[in-house]
Image 1 (cartoon, helix red, strand yellow):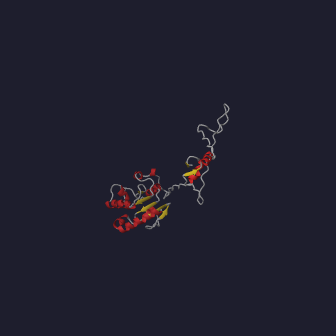
Image 2 (cartoon, one colour; image 1 turned 60 degrees about the vertical axis):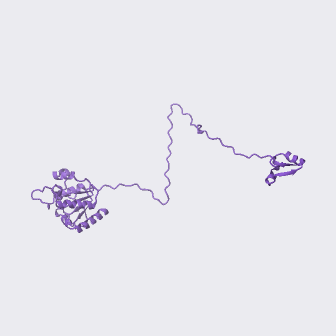
Image 3 (cartoon, rainbow, N blue to C red; image 1 turned 180 degrees about the vertical axis):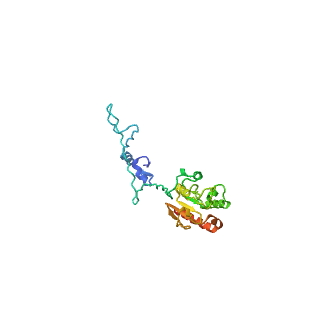
Length: 265
């Protein structure tokens, strides 16, 4: 008998898997094992691989040939539906712009700018066209006319700095012209030209730093720091400009009041 290595034929593989390396066999037994046919191995079925589409080939059906002389077909348009709106949300309504506020004359005898005297025409050209706020006080025309009082100049600079209003959002419009005419002074009031200018400028608010409303304006019933609507505009009477210069506490209170008033609008 001769040792047979188990790696020479499939018949000996079970023994090798069991850890047996060599077997002592008779020659006859060895020959029979070696002559045993190897078990057939069934092929593993494989799925056929589908052919890859040829990008150069189109499977779409070609439209029938168009007769000569016939008009080309119209293209088809498909409207894409809007995406669904999440539950619980409301459809957005179109935004409507606020209509501009129309100017309303404060006097029946108000004059259009083309009929104003030269002083007022020139002043209008230097004034912002659509201010939301107009300031005035008795001696404003002199301060605007190149002969400004130093205390008034410093006061106005401080006032505008503390109010921090955007440029063009406010304007100064005097109660009278300067230089003063015969018999006129800083206390004079040209109500017709002043109110005609207010109608043209069309501000939301008019601040009268006069201590009281000048009677020439016909704004009876106005009280200090009590806003009143006249002709669609808000008029506010404040302490006199000279009193505000000499009383810092009243000035500080006025700034707080005006800021709250403008913010609330």
